[in-house]
Length: 484
Image (cartoon, rainbow, N blue to C red):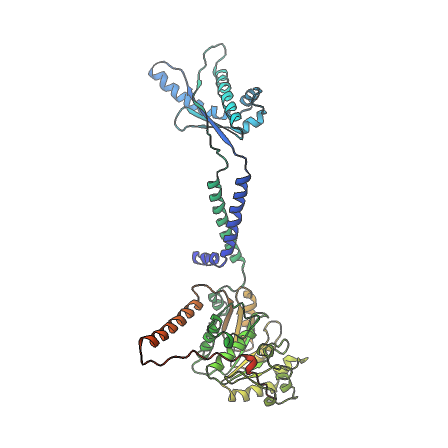
């Protein structure tokens, strides 16, 4: 994974880093608060080998440096611990004393430092006092040859025992710092692992490389879409509406040599936002002055009529079955001349109806009457309806949900379109997260600039005519006039 991809993965899953850091610091706080304070008493031994003259003194120094390394191991030995434990004032076993004593050799010297750590300050001092006595005796015993009264090496206490009045453990600053570092490492590792195991579409570049077709628009996530799908008329200045306009513009320039009139909007699976995209795209085309027909071809789970607030019991299925005329069931919507052909009743054979000659003839006639015919088709993978309709259209737009649709399903859907000879115009990545660097902030900044410019023109020039605010679009309920 490239370092830039790693940074994007961590940024995309920043909450994992924050959660791991908070949890790690919290654990460090709990451990620090509940830990029993430990106090340290230290003392220093000097190792000496008696000698006479310069030569003997030099050899004695080398001998002492060699010996002091061995003496450090004796500090944790059973023999010294048992000797200290015989003191009734200490009240600890030999094994408990061993856990509290540690020794360290001062580099390139004959000094040996000893630290006794205990939760009781006074007991720590008593252990150190007793250790100073017993360790000297132990070394004299070990270093005195048989039949001799003089040891070959001696140890002397040159410093201590000294008690540190401040506890050496716990250390809040160190613990919290280590907790934070550990949390950051765990969080970043989890984010990178999650990104490596993620098989969904996370970026528009991933989608473009996977499908081999351009990404016509990245439509941001709008939490209000679920309850109010008509974003274009209800909230025309939102990031969602601006992205739909971007999709509309790109569709007009996909092929400059051939005008696209019949466009299918589909997806690989359900719940990817295809119907919401199709409905708002139709409104966007109508607002731009185009003659638009929106056909609800998802005859299995129709939603267009519900979103637009129109009657959907009679529609496309009735026309294809020969039970109704097109002019009797098509319904105008809004004040921009949008025409809507709802799905009608749910037939037992949707695929046969959509692939019939009646469907082809219907699209041929409407192609001549409208500038744009948008078809909301079912998902590609569960059923073949969308694939059949796509062969009758000028092209299809594949809607892909950010962070939800797997790459294998997207690739399978795109392949199915190309296999039957349908033209894939491009893709639309929906429900993308809104960040500060996204188009939402850019658009809002531009809107503020335009408002500021209008105010400045009204104030700074006396001849400027007052600019009235743009008329708000009519609500769907006020513009629905179902044609009977």
